[in-house]
Image (cartoon, helix red, strand yellow):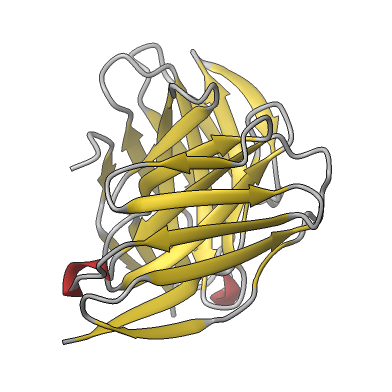
Length: 111
Length: 115
């Protein structure tokens, strides 16, 4: 299958600090990427997406950066809050409707 | 609330049995996707239906099958269950995003425990 890997399985940050979650992908043909957040007992929730013709996309408190040269994706969360504690997945799509998900990074926000 | 409804929330059954998981997509969404999430495998794509027809197949076992009905709800059938089938099963439906891709909206999942 495709390889969408995460650099760190767990991440702890202080409340109010910025968080950066990284993701490496292996398929250079992938042209669309999504970050999802999954809280305990819930399904994955869309956060932000980006196409391969972009390097950066911003949402509310979140920014996704895409570096196609090194096949790297990151999610930046500004002013991290306790409600941001969850598992974060990146998913890649190389056309069609199949997405390949990484195993996730668990973010813990320390009050 | 994503708008995708999955039932039941929990299923406990025995090896060798057969179960059916049900999903209702968001209003207006024609696509339904099924995923399996286990601790050691992450989210694995199983199958996609679009407006009643199978569109894409992922790592779905032959013991598993799915269908999408005219009212667009979908069912995932798991038969001859094995202990290793214990997992969370998610359904998602999709909508087009401003970035040009299809965002998948996930239901809350069905937790299947095979004993």
